[in-house]
Length: 486
Image (cartoon, rainbow, N blue to C red; front, side):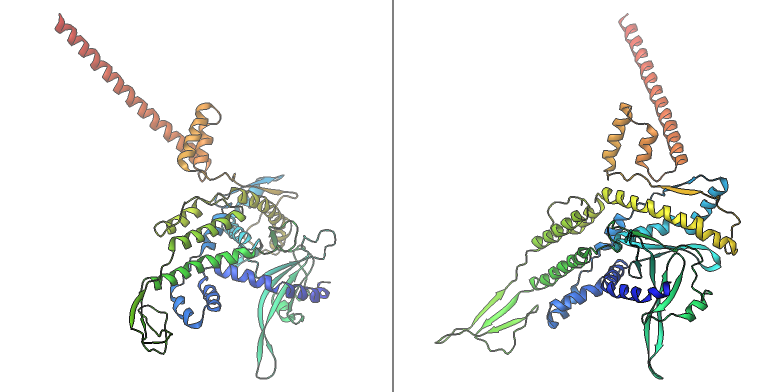
């Protein structure tokens, strides 16, 4: 029974606490909170006085958002979902669920978390007004667990963070403790971090016995690792996400001092020496005899271009380790660094990474629709919870086909290459136009071809009229010249 598994599940949660905390930081940065983590890192690296100055010049450029967004594009071109061994009502029901779920939008988020954390969870559920919805759960709020001896990479339990509850210590004091929900194919249980079953919570949701009404774990777990139940973290992702803006912040800090010369005086009494813009240093020489006063200027010199090239090189090398081919921008300088990094991201070739994602999400979609068709939908229909009177045909399946993930092309070069293929007879005009306009539907492509043909026919007619007119004028001129000779 799942109740007997609670001690093992708590040990499992404790074992992966640092893993979940790491994923939470990635999630927070991806949601836009980079600055607080940069401040924490710089505060540990600088003296309090120096940190007080540099914190106003922190450069929180968040490359993580751009990279994850660039990687997560397999749902930008809507995949095709095909009914297998079904009937017309199955197609109608599939279209209804696609619309209700807004599935491409939700699974795009699923894809983003997959690239961010190397794994994510999807759950079909009923929102307000019993509207079918999909909840995408990031990898800082759940853990898979397996006691499967045959294949330990297949989850037998899914543990989800259920929030916190107040626990009374004495009459005056209480603390917040974590609560978890765990599912197997046949049972579920809500329990707290002390191992106690939260009976009140289970009664509130109308299932005090802990029966899994779906008779299958109601989550789809997508995992980037083929060898481990819980994928190893890519610690470089978090490190480089923070290091790159820290290097730029260091440069901002250094430039502040380069912008202001420091005046110094020798053999002038002073109690303190300050490293700050417009500072005056009073120094005393060491030695015998009378020393003449001396005034001088120190002008710091910072190799700005060298630092920018370091940032660019580290960023480029990091992308390559991810299987991403960054765009080329040449040598970085103050003039081209900002636009150059942006161009590097825009021109990244992530074809190989996307092909691997398509394989993972083809399997995830197959599992999701199997869960919905054979477990979730029948339960919802039996209780009359959804606004549909249709049932799936027994044995029906849904096959998902993603758009071809082609290498990134410069559009001008792609036009040239496709033109040569069409001229050589290696492809058709319709296929060429589809490759140039992958977001267009078939009827839109047909309409575009019709417009092109009409326009081309009109142009050809005009060209013929001009040629005929020129030929007519030429003949008239020739006749006039012949008459003049006569």
